[in-house]
Length: 310
Image (tube, rainbow, N blue to C red):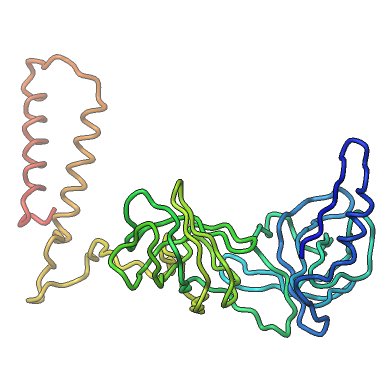
């Protein structure tokens, strides 16, 4: 039986009866206070004079003022302990919130940039673990063509909003109206999920709904689009061989000139540099000048000969 109320939003007639009826209804979901607390974050704020504030819904359990909860997962899948500094509900300070209630928490010693939508605050008794991959039974409501492995779309699960990739499925392809078991992987950060949790899979006009059936705890794995970590090690590049390294037969190593050649080449380069720096002048007719030049060229040629030793 469904009651019918004749109301008027203009005059307000019978609105009080409708509100009274709604307040008398029993909640559709029962929450037990002895369960470990779990709070999903829907939004974050930075309030001057207060600090970082998060708002969301208490999914189960009881959260009291000054409780220490685990906040996460971070990009590495870790959960960090955090203390609740104050609790507000409907713009009024309260000392506790229960399952099914929305509230805002002021947190201690944490920056707003470290918190994102989709993170949770849970009791340490839950020993939470984040998941990169999961399996779900999905039903494709609409898709223009076909869905195949490596297809990417946005996954909505509670307050989670993140793109996921289809790694595999039990069918070759999916079309509108098909059902399948699909293996997903998040592309950016791991998320905190539950078995039997509902999800929506969409991309453009593509829409699919499903239920999570299996969680794969792979928080130690790196995301698909991340670069491998570079480890600082000694360089393996081959540098120039030392002048004292010997070759296979005990002689000079390949590619390394003998000590005499190196000294000669150095002297030749220095003499060439000094000659280039001298001002150019017309050659004189004196034999002494020409003889000096011949002696200089001869000395350079002698230095270029390995057997001379210079």
